[in-house]
Amino acid sequence: MPNRTPNDLKTMGLKATLPRLKILNLFETSEERHLTAEDVYKILLAEGMDIGLATIYRVLTQFEQAGILARHHFESGKAVFELNEGGHHDHLVCLQCGHVEEFYDSEIEKRQDAIARDRGFSIHEHSLQLYAYCNRPNCPNRKSGVHRSFSDDSSTEG
Image (tube, rainbow, N blue to C red):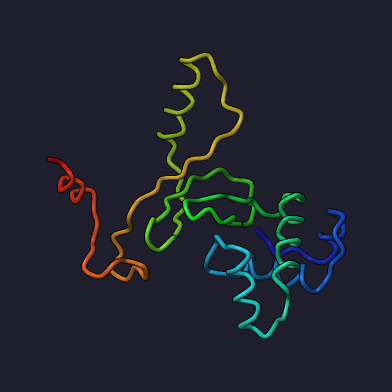
């Protein structure tokens, strides 16, 4: 998606203020696609921008209402925002470090449509979040000595 201009914001009914432009630029250029309001605040503060947390929450809500951002509520309970680029995707969320991976699987989509159709429904919209433990060795929130994988679940039987 190309970077939006101040005129793009104006056509959406939003004045192109410095906080709005900075926050929008952050979402358009950040390597991390899923950010909380606190993440935005910390990143902007590190860049020398003193934009209050209340302003950030207000801008994020305005961007969501304008269709610029999409809001998700993952396991942490905190609102997480990402650019709304129009394409459907699902999410894998690490329960320890909070890392979010996006994915799209046409077979999953077909199966969900078939399940709905078999039960007399037509899907209007849906979201799928898979909560798991990442197997990344550098998971920043992994408890020491813990390395989970699907095979680890057998230890809970008994």
